[in-house]
Length: 247
Image (cartoon, rainbow, N blue to C red; front, side):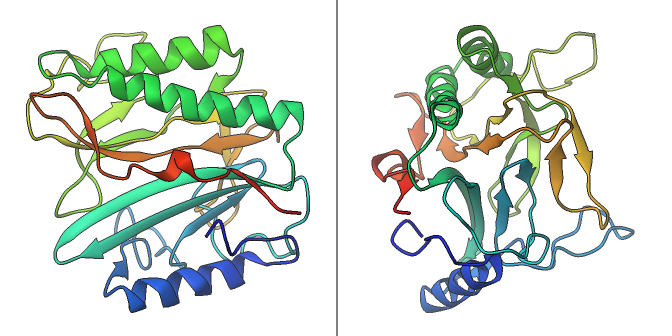
């Protein structure tokens, strides 16, 4: 995707590339046709493609103008391969990042790394949120998006436990917060950050979720397996790729 995405491309073109690549690799999208309940609409795209104030769940058709320099693009791809799930996301600046965008991207990357280091066998899931929230909100002065978080996965896209990015403020707010990390847990962990607010709003049609104030947002996600030797990142390598794409 880093080699492909440039100004002038549309989300529909990017989504078609994802579809063709998954087919070539013998995989299929586990987002296409997904719905949270029988009453919800099915997700219509192969990837979640979210631009600027769209935090997550952007469809290939929600944003129709071509990408241009200065846009912030989140690419979230979930695949099914031989009965197992892979789910990862990263955020890119189209063209050189402004100082504000660079701060946002760095906060996402660094908080993800800090949180993963806390996923140690014998500790609790709340330690992940402590590390992420301290970095994003105290060190960087940005806002973690409320109501969205990571999850277990494996044979299905979403499995327990829920992995909040923020520390619970009231008893029962996050029932998995005190869950002890054990060897072999598969966790898709994903800080989602807004520049101006942690509140969100939904667009018409259910799927895209936007920052409540229209400010820029980021989304970084890794798949992690917990082991006695420390957390193993199964989607390692994303941070080695450039996140400022040529204009």
